[in-house]
Image (cartoon, rainbow, N blue to C red):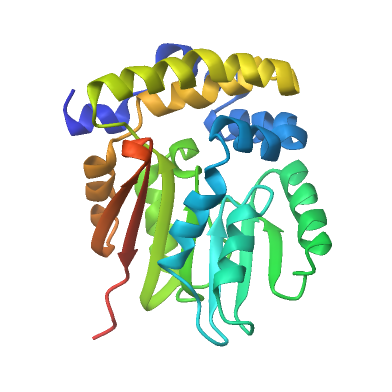
Length: 257
């Protein structure tokens, strides 16, 4: 499958779900609303507890200095925004946006519980249509979000727009393991066992069958690098974690001339 086909592919079963819901954004919003109460627990279970380590690795690439600001796209329950605040200067501020109210409600409660309300703010918003002026943030980030976007180029373009010249971007996403044997094992675990776990933990088989299916048509790390570059980002690099189960892409916005 060539790169263009990979970027444009939507599996028939996913297309049917999106059409029945009234479009991919509507489907995704409703799905995450249904699983909000088990989202954090399932992240720990699915990743065997590694997702926190992956988030820490991601935000270290964009740690904020004194009085800098960062944006977390598709923040969900706020885990990445929280990690970014923790690795940044005490005077730095982080804003997280998400279009699922149920996720934001749980995220705000978590931030209050952790005593980070003065450093992390969660707002409702759409990552593909950000309600911020140009050049608003020193850095932006996302975790397990971009494969849910309707238009990857639009999403990375919006991130670029709201980041100041010279600013940084980091994107953590499920990827495609390079080793064929490991890839087959991962496909079995993520495609067969994860939906069963979702059903047992949160009675959400449908949602946790969507998540692995959404990965199969998603670009591999080199192809996603080209998407990010095409959106206008510079110095794009990526790092494989756990043999390519996930990849972290980092980039910078070219300084103003």
